[in-house]
Structure formats: structure tokens, C-alpha cells
Image (cartoon, rainbow, N blue to C red):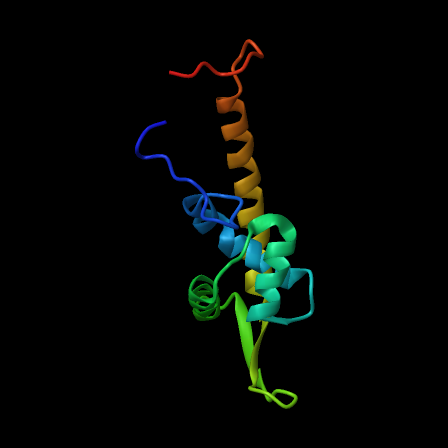
Length: 127
């Protein structure tokens, strides 16, 4: 293994560099699958879908960028006996972006799969 190899953090199934590349569309997908959601619920949904634990320090800045881009709307609501929550809803613009990004990601994943599979069907040689 080279010294540049990234290993997943404990509890995370994937290297952080990989997750940063797809987390935006993963969050939008989770929002598209529900009417609305709030940060902690999105974190749980991502973990249930195999992303591992996504910390608030990663998720909330991403949600803010999605809001700034017009891909989500936000609404503060008072909590039931606790602090209020900020709810997020995907917009039409966010849905269009998600559809385009999904098509691009699937094409990229197919390209990588083709590249990584040797043409003779054998396992890749290791150095």
C-alpha cells in the first residue's frame, strides 16, 4: 500500500474523500424521498443507507450550501419541549440538479468499473 492510501475512519465504511464527492447528491436523494427532514434525521437516513456516521460539522455546512444554491428551502419550527429544528425541503431546482448529478455519477461509476476490471477477467495484479 502506498502512503497516499486513505483508510476509512472507524465506523465509516468508505474513505472520506469518496464521501465528500457524493454526499451532496446523497443528501438531496434522501430529501427527495421524504417530504422534508431535519439535520439529525438526514444523518440517520444516510447511516441507514450505508454511508456510516455523517457528523454535523460535515452535514450542516453542506445543507447551508444547498440552501444558498437554491436546491433546498429551510423552515425553523419550535421543538416539542426542546430546541427548535430547521427543516429542509428539496426544491424544483434541487430535484433537477439531483437528476442531472445522478446521471453523471452513474456514468462515472460505470467508467470506473470498466477501468478497474481487467479485460481478461482475472483479479488485478498487485505491485
